[in-house]
Each structure stands twice: as structure tokens, then as C-alpha cells.
Image 1 (spheres, helix red, strand yellow):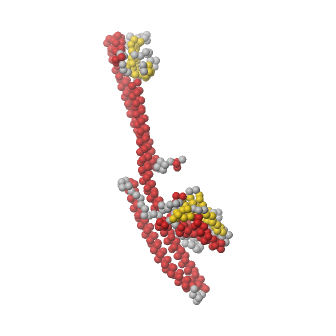
Image 2 (tube, rainbow, N blue to C red; image 1 turned 180 degrees about the vertical axis):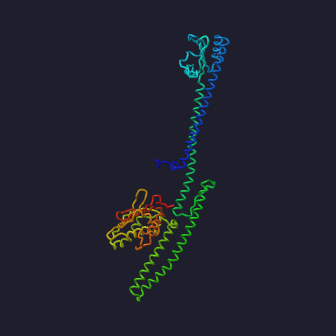
Image 3 (tube, one colour; image 1 turned 45 degrees about the vertical axis):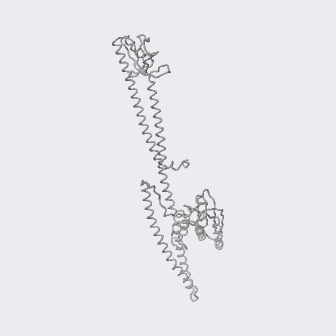
Length: 461
């Protein structure tokens, strides 16, 4: 489920933005709630103060002019031309209405502060009201209250405003968080894409900057400077390696030629011929080592990428099986090929060399009566080239280590080889965007080169 979400939603940047949006929303909500409560409290205080002032004026009329003056004052307040939110009721000592605009005395008991909340029927429907009652000297009772219709209407307006403000705050916050996270993710994605190209061997590629001079630009500048220094060091090291390989390969080739001529001299004894042949073998091994080093250097620099073309792995597998079939038959080893058509983009020469190295290793370690199989299959999003043998295999702890240059499991180094075969295969796999994996064939070894679908039909970048 989480994988179906957009990448920017799953990013740390978006989660941080969302956290701050929620924090901002809670803060704004608390502020709006405080404003609402303070506003309602102010309105209630003003309503209560107006009610008390009105009641004080009526009681003053009663003190000065008696019950008749009080009746006149109440009637004056409820006159049609003075209709407002004031509610009044004057009852005699027997509970009979004398004056006012209420039809019945409220049945609600007053609270601890003497205030009474009750419902009242007006011409436009039921309303809520709040007021106080006063007992007069002659036994009559006076109720002075205020209709809360205007107050409740204003309260509803404030609540609506608060709801809209909260929704707008959340909408703008989430929208801003999405915008910011997408922008930051785009910058990070550009750095990731550049890193992938550089890891694929394009050491000349650099991370683009926006020119704003922000933190990402400064980070990109530092990374570019580091990459340039790494490129300079690697180019220098590869130049030294190439020069050594070229400079040594030429005299070794000449030395091998002279030894071969010397071996054909009939004056040599059998011991001398044997020594010369062993020296020629050593020279061949040195030449093979230098050739492998140069091939690894070429694969890691990515220089062959410009000449890549669409080709069929199945055809390469069939050609190699046909090439090594007679050698396997001579050693009593069965060679089997089972390849489908698998189109990839790559260098035929390098892929042929990589698969040849795998088959050559299998021939070295498979005993007589064993079997070597070479197959090309489709497995989900990958086209896999698989080489299996029945040799001793490689312990699980050493399977990654043997992909490094000059690593050999034979610590005594008594068996032929330089420890560069699998390293060259790994370098060629990286150049083609393929993944190499080693597994147990029970007994033997399974080597798989998996070419992702993304690299079919177009060059790996």
C-alpha cells in the first residue's frame, strides 16, 4: 500500500512538512479557540452588565414612585416603538402578571449567581433568554432578562468563521507542504540521478546547480569538487596501470617469441625444452593478466558504452556453447545450452568475453562426468543469463569477495589463474547495468547475470 503512494508523499521532506503543518494547525486552532472564548465571554459580560443596569433603573423607579411607577417604567420599555432584546415580567404577590412582555414566569431555578436561563416563545419562534429575578418590598416579583438571539447569532457567525479559517489553514498548510516537499525532492532526485550515472562509470558527469546559492547548491558544489578529485585520482591510477600493462606486455611478447624460437632448437636437451616451455607458460599467464587488467580498466571507464547496440543474449550463449562444446567433450563434461531470445543493449565483444570467462571457470572446476549448463531465461522484470556447473562451488562467505580483482580461494595459488576472471565479469556487468549473483548449485556454482527490463531497447545511462 505504501509503495502505491507518490514518492514525494513517502519522502522524509514531506513528513517533516506535514509535521509542521499539523503543529501550525494545532497552534492556529488553539489561538482561534482562545479568540472565540474571549469574544463570547466579553459578549456575556456585556449582556449581564446591561441586564443589571436595566434592573437597577427599574428598582430605582420602584423606590421613588412605588409599584405604579414601576409598572409605567416596564410598560414604557416593552412599548412597540422600543422593541428590543429586553424581556420583563412583573407579578403581584399572588403570582398574577401585572406588566411585561412575557406570558409566564420561568420555571427554571436560578444558578448560584442568581442568573436564570430559560426558553421564551416570541413571535418568530422559541428563543433562549438569560436574566435575574428580584423580590420587591410589597411581595411582588420582577424579572429582567435579555433575549440571546443576537448573541447566539453572532456566536454562530464566529464559529463559522473559525471553521473556515481552520479549513483554509489546513488546506494552505498541506498545499505548501506538498509544494515544498516536491521542490526539495526534485533537487534530491537530481543528485540521486547524477550519483547513479557516476556510479555507472560516467566519471565526467556532475551535479547540476540552480544558481540560487542555497544549501543544495553548496552541497552540489562540494560533491562536484569531491568527484573531480576522485576522477583525477582514478584517471591517474588507471593511466599508471595502463602504462605498466602496455609497457610490460610488449617486452613479454617479444620474450615469448624468442623463447618459442629457442624451444625449436634441436640442440636443446629435454630438460632445457621443458624449462623453456614452462617459462613460455609463465609468460602467457603474465600476458593474460595484463590483458585482463586492461579489459577491466576499459569496462570501468565506460568507454565501450558509445558502441553499444541491440543484441541477442541467446545467440551469444549458443555461440559460446558451440565454441566450448568440443573442449568439454574432450574432458568428459556434458555441455548443455538452453537459451531463449533475450534482447539487450550492450557490447557484443565484452558480453562474449564475460560469458566465456564464466564457462572457462566452470570447465576448470567441473570434474569428469559433470555437466555445465548455459541458459538465457526471462524472470519477471529481468532477462537472466545463467551458468551452472558441478564443481566444488564457492562458500557463501566468499561469493562477494571473489568478484574483486586478484582474489583467489586457493591461498597457495598453485592452480592456474590470476584471480581476475570474475572481477572482469563483474566490471562488464556493471557497465551493462546488469546484476551479478553467485549461488549454490548443490553441488557446484550458479552464476546469474540479470539484465533489467529498463536496459532493454535503449543504452544504459
